[in-house]
Image 1 (tube, rainbow, N blue to C red):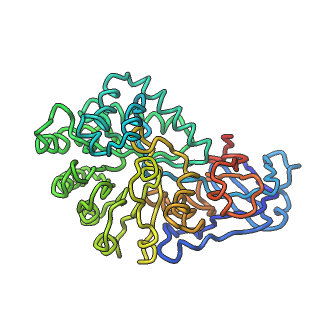
Image 2 (image 1 turned 120 degrees about the vertical axis):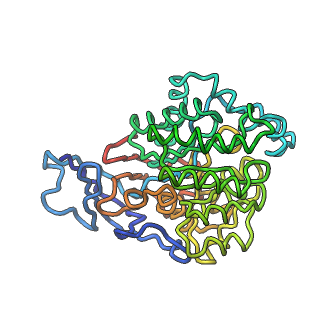
Length: 417
């Protein structure tokens, strides 16, 4: 089994004990570190780590051990991004002008733009070309330090093209060392062919799309856009109940445009996460207390679309966990840079660097069901790591948010950059 020793580490950050799957409330301020350290990788996994000199027998003179000199930089877990739409065709730069001219997300959608524009482009794009474009985006975010991605469908809006998207996600899983989870989002919008017949479209999602997705084993989760102008809480529950028949757990788009009832709908069906949450009240916080559902906020969408930022501080002060994700998509958040997401968490949401770090690593891993295997520096977890250049403090990462800070990205024990 191949072994890799990382030595001369200035500081390991993000150490979490085995079995700790998420951080809640005051715990989100805690980031355990180890100075003057070394870390040993065996195969794809973290084997051990410690401070001072590495144990005897792990020197660079032992030919079976590859050695990486961190040069005083940090070693931290790779970012985890639990909400993306990176499988899409083309772009929506034309709508960028509409946004600049003052049109809202809803106004663009009412004009037939938004998600429906992406659906039109996707249907015209062959699978091979869709895979090529999506692979390029996935490789880009991998080199920026993302080691785990959740990717949604939702630009097909008919059975054939939803399956095409999910097959592309499956190909990305096979092509990359990134941990990828696939989410079926047939209920992202009502396809053009069903305009004015939303109930029939929901029935089609439940009785045609879901069985086809399940038959090919293409999805890990099911998502619904439960918000004003999209799907109602009742329709959301109908889809989640149908998904449970196929063993697929829910992940909900909720409260981006209005207080929609989507959080409560998701919690009632034990959704793994409820995402967006730009518009929330105390009722949403109360609904999430004591549940297994991870509230996930998407500051990149708030930044690009000039929406309110989620009230992450209020959630944390109420004892809840919070995850942050990029929402990488062509219309409302065309970036998957999780370092920038962390910075927005600090600058715009007033999270401390420690809270934002936990939200972008362990908690985001939890929000895609993989915090047992990624999201922290823990013996036995996958060696999905960022080796940084020498840094003065964890806070430098979000503070100087576009100054290069990565020396190497290591995924499943192999150096990627």
